[in-house]
Length: 243
Image (cartoon, rainbow, N blue to C red; front, side, top):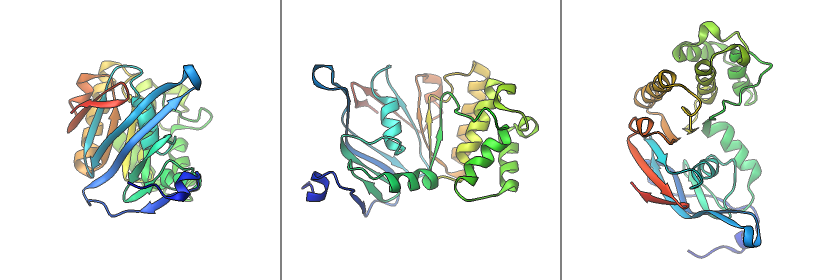
């Protein structure tokens, strides 16, 4: 594929593309390195993948293979050195596209972090409400329904430090779902949970995927967690090794 002059100059390059309607997320030739010179570390080496709408995809691999870096690039929170991400028909090349990336982050993507990233001075309920209000939306009735569905409505008045680890993660999931994103990305969502809480969260993910046809991409080290997914990709050395 010929690269446009604008892309070569590092200028913003976003284009609307015709894609298969069943494909919601596509990554093409994703390359990412950190460091310089002899210390340069090639984390992603021309990786390609495709996610269908409504699919539950798990990505596995050893530590350091590039899983979390890939997830941040798919979620438009980081940029590849080369390659492009297409989300819901919109293509983001490796050139800087900060305003458009931020808009898509707010509208299309829900992110579940391993360490929850809840705001410590706010209650669980207000953490979820904040997710909507930064988008200019107020829908307290929907927030309450979501907290009920997550099983944390009765404790959502507490601040994160007063909640159990499992309750914090469920609040974090509610926050990720509050703006009804097109796709949910989860980075080791069970990594800080015990077995019971981890199993409960995975069952919740599966319900959301099946009942709402919610597209989900989950990074995990756990074979048990990956079994909840429709499809599992294995990464090694910055590439998809097997499916």
